Length: 396
Image: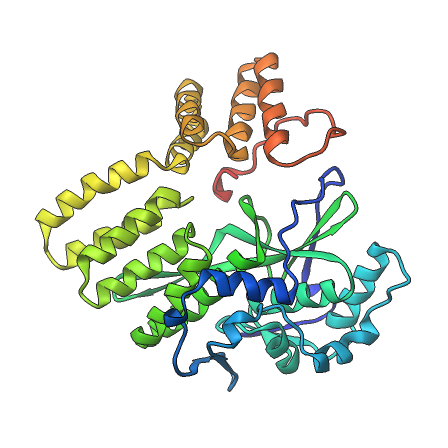
């Protein structure tokens, strides 16, 4: 499906103005090359170019050399073409507004192509791409304009393709722009309305998800050998990604490697914010094979993995909250915090519960912890009034 991005049809979201600038997660082209070179063994790199269809006649070619370059890298030719969009003498805010309008509102419209995970250069040259491709371009162009730009992963919008009763996961990526104390998030998926779980990514992790998307495309086309090369690279760059671990598990299953698949599914379950999607994958596999004995043993392992995953308890606590079982929700939040104490959504849920119960002191403490892990600064505003989103939005 192709959608034109014209004028304000590209969504721009402004955050509250109290957000502190993020920890630097950006690399120069040379720093990226060095970091990736240190992470990847030479024998992991493709011996021959790997070609991935990018939609509408566009192809992506991955080589051992191109893997060392960041996806946001702009060639001298593209830099020259976008240089009229950069007003260096203006303020950061005016510089961003001018760059954004020049790239997306005043030029030839960009086409949104779901399967086109392109580099920044390819996105600009073809004036098309998916959210990841256009974010690559936005990050590269913003940094060229001396703006602080970085990748953000939206975890509650997961692209998935169902094939042969298993789910292959891809990622929704948006751009974060830091202008003083204000963070702007630029989303290139048409009609996106909300998201609740947004994670700041380093350039290296973003590159891992970039190759995950490309490998997932190859896997769906039956090119398992080339998919394996890119998945292995993706895992090295972002080993904690449950999307990558899930996809490697699917790939191994298709090759008949049940033991290897199980290992990667269990890794995915230990960090998955939405473990049910991974569990559904695993269950379908063994049910289809009518291997009930292996399914029983795997279920026991999966329950152990889930119990090491704080998001598993958070999801159950959220269900209890919506059922007005506040005591049970608080108990599960405590378990989640013992596993990992820096998840802001846990404190947000506690804040909501204490507000419902009228426990002002506990409510204030939960809000204090929420601000701590959401990276708000010391001049954060007073506690907001608790307003629940509609239940049909997923509980938020």
